[in-house]
Length: 222
Image (cartoon, rainbow, N blue to C red; front, side, top):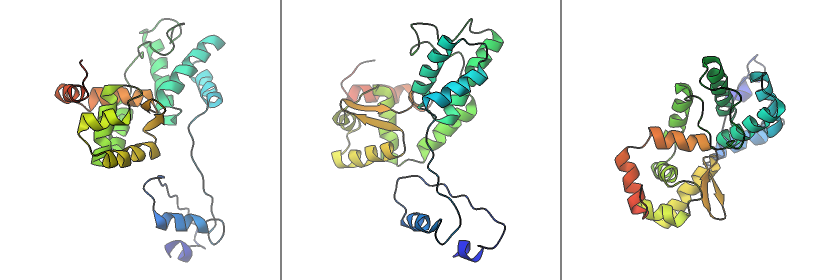
């Protein structure tokens, strides 16, 4: 009603919505945009390889094409193309070059996916990840923390066992995490969409005791 009454006013309204949970009132609004209401519906996507390459070339002008290839592969894996994470990872590389903490191009040949980051992520990025986690349901938060401890390709039954969850409750939380882009389901288990997010959760959002309890419940050792 407010949008209808303000149709002639010099006003722009931006509405952001997540795909989960379903909000019928927002779906109803979307059906009217472009028909009863002037406006556009935009779906945001992560940066693809070409966009990451263009960004890396602008932020790392001293890198040769092979070095750009390596850094793009690494940033794509760590950030999953999320613009905020991609930009800050590249900024960490430029800062490492400026401070002399890295020599030559990062990552080095043959260490594209495992060389340590040249610097810490800014507090703003870590805080953004923490805020995003806290917006999830309590069960989804527990599963995300357990997945950060247990590593890549964690089978759903192992997560259920590590947290003593009812399978149906765990399934709902896993669906929530997939919808919101935290985890991806693969044939052998669940993995983080963005690898750097897993590192932040494991490092900053779990105590050593919590980590040990998850490993013990899952039948693993440190």
